Image (cartoon, rainbow, N blue to C red; front, side):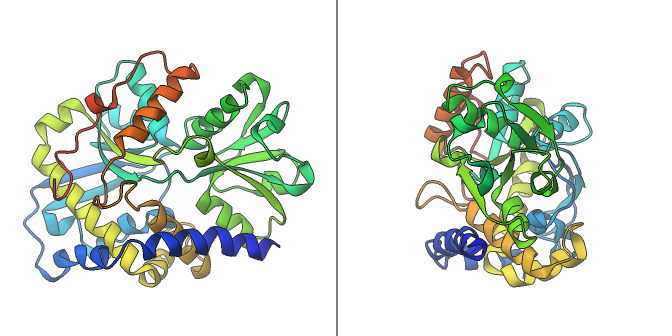
Length: 341
């Protein structure tokens, strides 16, 4: 039943992943809380891929918790519509750091942009393609000739949908892509699209809101690549190294706080997130994000990269014709600013 789906998706994933995390993360980061805030050394403007939604509660909690401020950094959040949007806002000088997906990062590198990834926000792939059971879509090949929803044309939902299509030998022109907006399952329920490219959190919300019996294809079953990373321009990295390092430590502390305090975060989301009106949904979403924040490589800290998986992702994007250049990820990832590096 739908409830079983919900249980499986929301709780199994998050609880299993978090049990493995051990107590290290709980105690890891709350040090910043007890100290008076350091004098502000500078400001970091973060270009997001979304509006202020519940899954980024750890960042939205900054006015209440001050994790980044405790490191001497003032944080400003610039909303966006997709990972490509976040990169554009950073390249135009409106932001210092982009919160973006690997596909958007690879595509910008392919165009010759000088960019570097400095922190792996969600090492686990959270993207999926969801259809109603009645549509009979069970595998990527079944998407041929279908209408498929995406959040935006510059979002990770589209990039990850393309990866899934290519696994079945399909091109973007073999389907009709429809922009449905964020977390929007209404077009699927109303039959305007046959399937929708989404994320685990979008699906959890959809299930709570009664989309009914669905088939779910997980992108990670085809390409398990990180979902989102912090990316900066090379010149920003050179000029603001210390400031970026302080920001990453504050961000890591905020992620560890949310992992250790999902209930508190769910309540806070009610005050800070534009979609935070239902606390039970906030808690589902926060637990999923906590699970996806777990390091991909056993024993490594929050924010660490799985370079082998990322290289496989870059090679896949090239094999699919989504990027033309060969991208050597060790040249475009800098791990020296990671907390504990």
